[in-house]
Image (cartoon, rainbow, N blue to C red; front, side, top):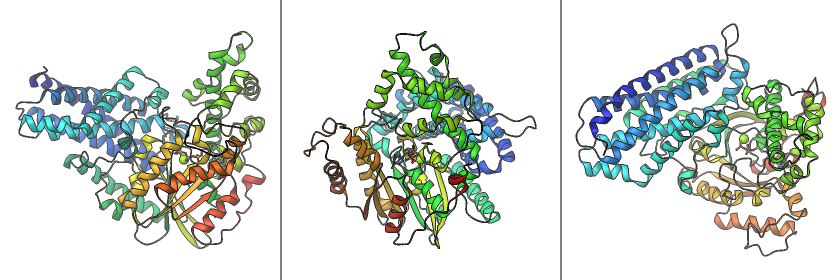
Length: 584
Ligand SMILES: Nc1nc2c(ncn2[C@@H]2O[C@H](COP(=O)(O)OP(=O)(O)OP(=O)(O)O)[C@@H](O)[C@H]2O)c(=O)[nH]1
Ligand SMILES: [Mg+2]
């Protein structure tokens, strides 16, 4: 058995971890000074690191003072947690070091974009920090109890075991994988369904050290946001404000008073699983309101589209590698390294030969088969992008509004948009839909708001990106039930929107099987209306929504129609913009 004295040796590691965290926090401070727009994103990370540092400082204090008898499991957990913290702190330090600065010492544009828009690795690391802090807080609570029995009770709870297991999995992923893609793929989601869907563990976050650190930074963040808003006239576009992403107990009323005005614009939260059309709906609303944020940063959208194309190319190339018998025949194709370009962040423009290579890749039967039989949403808008490859990869690389609408840019955290349609103001919250992202949804749960819950009708034969054993429609049903029952949403208007109706119709007409995934379906296989009614009934049987709509979100008129019905108002046609006529 590990004796308590052995963990005294860990005090030294705790001190060195605290040192690394302090160094990371000071790096972030210097980044924030140069980069006002990302203040909140960086502030959120600072707060998380500060909370982790505080938890470690408390552990150190405890180690140095009274250490009586300790439960065996508690000792093992403490040891494992401290090891994990050490690896995590070094990884964060390394990630921060990757943010490139220009020769004038300013943070480079690519680094800003990476951090704010597509910082998947950073988000994963932030999730790990949260998990680490919560486990340390839990262990500290156990350490501070008087009896071995009480220590044992706390660490043996199934919620505690799950949290410790997750942290161990995080450590393993950080040790085994050093590249950013693997950190993403190592996301640990194999816990029970409920904890996966809403991971709000009030107990873990109730301790004073954690909350003290969190609230101090949060108040600063609110103050600085309010100051900035007061200085900025007009609306803020999509992705303009990234709220802090702390996990906070659902019982805390303060969040409501701090973040959300009781009066004012209509609040709308867009919810649903990953790739359920939330951001596409938001982009359409922005277009209608005349607030087209992409016009202000076409270079970033170009990079996002290029990243999407490289990512799809990489996935299809994998299929070819697995099935190709003639290496020499495909030498040029196999020599192209899309993931290398992605990892190095070379996405401002694509190599001139890219469209040709892409089309060549698509001529392979195995690749075509993979696209036809895929059980994910990865290739959904591939036809569109293949049709426009030459334009998108051309020297001038003209972008159209449709390109922006068709690309899936995974939302991370919460993006808030303030829009005005006719004379009504709207405050719209868009969130990421994958399981790890859902831990942040609590920030957009407040009574009296309107919830638009999106279910992609075409997903009935697809599996989750983050868990290939779960059907997306089943996940949507579970999520719908959780949202509808959530006590913070009792007074909210809840609208159910079935999206991707165009893809759904195509799929059913092409003979895609439904019985294989839903054996209780009794209608004719190719009957679009019967299948639609079947899935609708599944949702309505759970809870009757205030309204229900079916739409193709890429179609502006469908979105106008939904908004006019939800808010009982006339919705204007969007004014033709440069995006549609000349491109950007
Ligand atoms: N054809 C078609 N494509 C759609 C529709 N709605 C969304 N898409 C596409 O589906 C992909 C995902 O849409 P998003 O709106 O980005 O999904 P999301 O719900 O914001 O996803 P996360 O941010 O990852 O949670 C994009 O490529 C969209 O163009 C639709 O009704 N029809
Ligand atoms: Mg999104």
